Length: 167
Length: 299
Image (cartoon, rainbow over the protein chains, first blue to last red):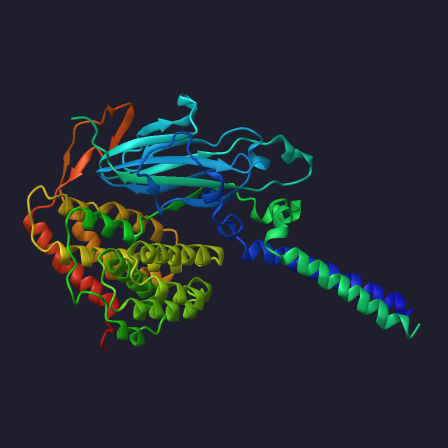
């Protein structure tokens, strides 16, 4: 009787601790901490180029398959920028993160990665502008197998003073 | 029975402790964290489109001004002893941003006299904001060892700011982060207008200061994410005169962008114009707003 009581108490305690641990996990560990520095490890550019430096507007976030997100950053006149995305394969499964770059004010589309079949984008900024990037992750069939998937997505932005080439 | 009961209990508790310890370890729990149960996902599987607003670090702004020929002037920084004025969480957050901006200024313009004091202030404010891990004793040692190295100091300051950002986002303190950014941006504009003290038509440095309208727009968009936070409302009101100046600047249409050397050229469809009068007003208001953030209001 007493052993059963102990076991029942322990099991009850265990399940309540587990429940508490899970709730606490979701409350106190949002995206940023799970994916900290992911972009620094996962993102890279195909083309090597000179003088580009890490831009502090780079970031990471936790995503679910099929999720959409928007990120707005400032590009300043007189600078070249290049940007790319990377995501954990468990949510991308070989597909790429698709993104559109939009003038934040006019909402005019300036670039669409799907049209250009691109994974990165490079531009010269000739007047300062706020750009909004709309990110869309592909759906993932593994989601239907009983597990909800999460994965990190990184956005790497690099910039340099615009290079003037030629005589 | 009397013997096995407590032993079983001890074993079970040990097992429980191990399981709990394992499940709360950061690195090893990666899979666990990323593949949570359906029950948990239903809580957090919100499909609303999340919007993020990024604002360049003050260090980028000062580096650009330095490249454009701006030179540091003495006596501009928020005095380090002002830290004792900051008692509320809003004041502490805003002035974490102000002192961070001062540190970026010091490291970019080689003003090292007070760097340790300013880092100590950041440490105190970080402790009070619950993000003490961003300025540790190790950080302080690192700073002391690199006092003569501008690049290293800039890197350490960026790292502190970045870690503060991540720590605040991770602990659900996005509103506090918005206050830090507000302090940093205001101080940057204030310092910018002080070191570029005379107006010149067509000056790239003046244009850069005028273009701080873009981060300012992003800051206000970020503020809008926290409509219930009274601290945000209070600081947004304090910064409003600065925002008003930026919103009053005229804009002229610009030729549409093309491509150059195979790379796309992108830019705003209008250019922000700032004349001598606008600049004078901006300089005055920037000082007033900055002082309202850094000095204790006399009640």
